[in-house]
Image (cartoon, rainbow, N blue to C red; front, side, top):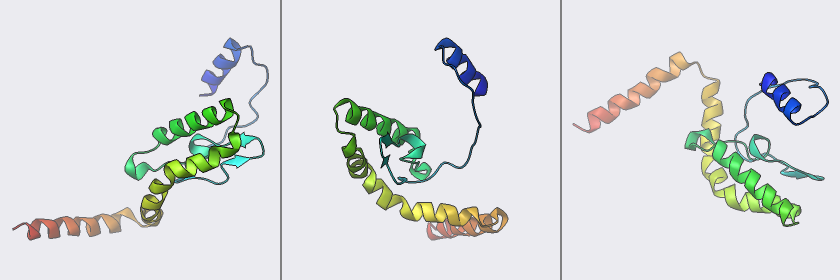
Length: 128
């Protein structure tokens, strides 16, 4: 990615150097604040992801579109309210999934997989 950045800087005649590169986990759910001073947080930084229901890049694109429209039409202060209205139903529905995702992250997979398999066996038995 650093090479791509350097190519982009060269093409666009951008001067300057990369100070540092960091990485980390992508947050789940809407992150707060969505607006701080004159900055609107979009994508993973603002909207986060809901990987359990297949919303990652979708949420990033929607938040970027909404932020762009808010800026273009001159009402960036409305961005957080529009985002909350748009994504709040997903936030409410996904809270248990986020909790269980964090919970299972701390459990040894060798212990949890047989437990899940036992439910598969019960479902097979109930269909007889």
